[in-house]
Length: 413
Image (cartoon, rainbow, N blue to C red; front, side):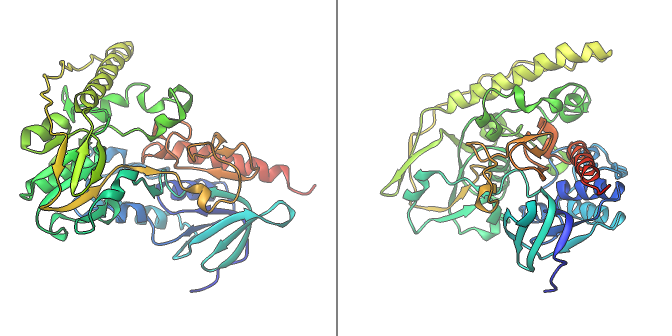
């Protein structure tokens, strides 16, 4: 592997949508920089399962200088098309990317610089922008330790398709976007599926002739600031339950139950080939219904002020919850763990720059602890949309302008 140059004004770590958007904005400002990517451009998208489709409509596939230009704005492209979009975007402005260069640590260097220890040698930088994704470390609940060794446990990142699993029933632990989508796919493949559910919001895929994301984009929903969250832990909550497969359709606890997926409370323990579940499925459904009501209120309050008639969102139908509280895991072929991810910056960023949940302490993307250190693509970095394709560009521009200002302040007179 070729060794990269040893010093840069700016190093961007990660070549997903955030790193590419930052690179675009830095390039536009004439700021010399390099983008380091451990694997390949858009690697987090490449690692998703085979049938994955974009969950938001295609029009949201819009980065700075590259708004969606396709002929199906309300469709949902498959995984590989998202990767092709990112590759084309990087090529369009000649992003200075070094693929196959992993950053193992980011440390204080001499003379106020940053020291990056990489697989291609040591680098120094005046500023660093960390763009390694909203979540990096799969969350593995402690109770998973009780799963018998003869039952395959597959993390969401390692799942590809139903054929890669051993025969038998499947227990999916975690019911966010990924858990619900995999449960649907496995059921359609003829598997008997059990889904251990937690709290997740849901909305219809379409209503009033428009996709729900398009409706929400007419309100302040995606601009909800970090400060509006009830607690720092709320950043770890599930995203809205919908799917983009087969042109997009509703996907939530009621649709899964109707198709024959067995819904359970959250996994409470495993011992002697028996899995135990909490009696909280009804509470989890009620949580999702409450978030549905919150969004209905938002739409009915804000849309008329823009001269837009709010769509009809009827009350959710009754939900029957009488799940088993324990299962014999003999006969199960696999357990798929989809219980979300946690930040993992502190594992390699050697600065005390994070809160108790592991998220960076920032103001407009700039670390409030370490001058010259920036973050982009973090869930709720500034707003709800900070980590998504059509929202990350706003943060990237702010970060790039901040770097430019700091550089001008340090120019010799």
